[in-house]
Length: 527
Image (cartoon, rainbow, N blue to C red):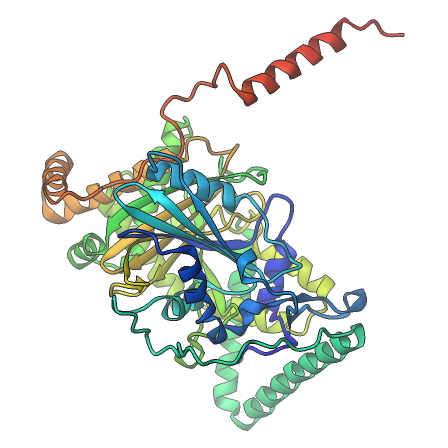
């Protein structure tokens, strides 16, 4: 239940502490729909009619005086839906390349912490009679799994507007915010939250004392898990071109793939869909590193793989209920089948290990930590010593969704970049598709499109191995079938094909002025 004066969990607060000038902690999605866009007023009314199901979307952050506790969620008395839901259009011809360029720019801008931490754009003018919705939500508000649950609030299960169990009555009373709290109210609410946490910890301790045998096993698992986390810290991830200082600007590339292809590979060659995903990402990164002239012999990169610990009873609740594992990316293995076998065995070992238990134990310990200690702990969680990039695979709904009668065709996720991490790969399945969203630092990865191309190539290699055919034969077969059904097999990268700088325009004028200023300073005699 989302209430006024709820205290942020330690995980939610850690995403606030991690945010900086260059590291934006929002996530989102790019949603492409068939059919003409709805009128903007109709779309606003549609969102307004569902907001009562997610009260947190009308709440903002409030910090107790002198940072005496974690921030709290409070009702925003100045909430304005028209600020959060915006309307824009692509210029002709409305290509997907233009849409992804818009996504890149929006991902480069931090959310305003003085308001509820979400924004949404209704985008008209997409080619082939389509439109798009771009969403952006702070990670402190929602994790990937609960974000999928919110689709049942924002989307319908049929074109006639039947919502998935959501209460969409038109006779709801107008929303009335709670009074804005004073500093004393915030301190008191934070203290109540801390007491509840301590009481919960005490209850768990007393319960453990009543079950000494099972409690001993739990403590043993927790200790082993903490030990494995310490060992992971002592064995840092390798230095790669991904782990450099980043700026605030982003590039975004999307890749369309089919979930059935991943299931075919795992059914034939073994493993899980997530194992196949990590194998494909490994192959794509290996190609990218080779293109940069980086030797991959003996190089095993590490991916931070979020794992949801959200139970069935908590589905639909906002906030983060996550832990993480550090998965292997064996870019040194050339053979795709051998690479998959390595990833499969390594992930099986991680699942049997206590790494996730150790991470969950640290999270529980952080619940009692003061804000200054929590801020330091959150920086350790995102350290480049632990991982090279974020790879998150979120299962989405496997049935078509609709907004005002228009069917959702594509759902591309947008992740976030921690400090000194130039690439994050998010994957989401929806209605038979498996869509990749690659978010990259603008300056560090002008060649991010190569990673997108490598994802297609790595999957083709695995499919060819599963079917016992050559990659070229498989590629020709798929190309003929895709053209025959009139599908759009790939999204153009936002990086232009011509990499040379333009010789005219505002950017060229700025460069010329800078060169002229530099020459003038060089000619000025020193006194």
